[in-house]
Length: 453
Image (cartoon, rainbow, N blue to C red; front, side, top):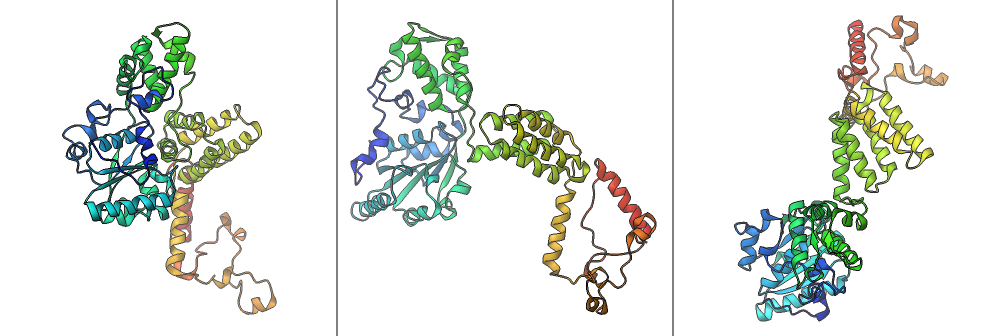
């Protein structure tokens, strides 16, 4: 059994919260805590990490875990893995919460770890839950101790560590990605909880329809904690009603709607936004409307979605169909007047229009090329013929001389005229595509070039 000597005993309460002797009727400890596995064999899911042949499983078995970051959605098993390591290691295991703890406390822990290493040769494993809550300056506090081996760091995060963890610290850690638990895994876990008389709900004497357990798993959306907490609420309601069968109807009475895995400020938010944009770009209206509704059903700000639609209209449709921007802007204006739920109509209309519209990225390519030319050549002088001759002195200096008025010529185009700075004459920044209206634009430009000789 691991030693857990820490400067302050109350720091271990995070990992002592689950009293393995409590039964289902003890509501002081949630079912999700009571059912937390104490070894890898009882974990569900994450076979890519914890199967006996996998490096992480071997490292835990040999008590040689490296510094690591456990990255995954809520309820996927990050804290459970840390507790299993705590139970097996001979090192001092110190749990610490980035939410509840303070930086002075962390410095005290690190000081104790240095003493333990220097005077006793004892290793320290530091588990930091929600490590992404530390800003990168705070993460620098324990970087030297991770780097020199004073502590082995285990960080748990729901956020993409590439964005939330100091690059220097991340380079010294192995990142293990945990996936959302599948419905079959969650159903198995729920079945265990119903049957377990010591730690679970077995003493309630409730049987379950497999379809009911599958529905709870589906609603939980990959989150074991959410699934078990929902099961506990449903069973408590059944017991109060004097019933002993968990059915789909019983589930629907307690869990009235599916809660979507979606963090409006986290990675999943940007994953769903990315899926929406790529579906519209790929001209798939069915996928586009699905992802848009995923955003709105999860509580995202409709104005954020509308802003993305306006950007897309210019970035990915552009002059292939100039109406796209008009539709997106009109949807934004209409929503601001309508509100919800009626505002869903203009949002959905815009999403579908943008998805089926002809696509062109020529607008973005044009201004990107023009900006690059400016960076490469600097501020080239405006040709004298294009300068504004607003005063007699300017005219005397040659401003405006040689300018030919386009409307005086056939087709309102001056044959052979150029308008770029002298050093860029002949450059092409706008290259219209062949989709939608841009095909006509391309043909017109080609005709004008031939006419100019």
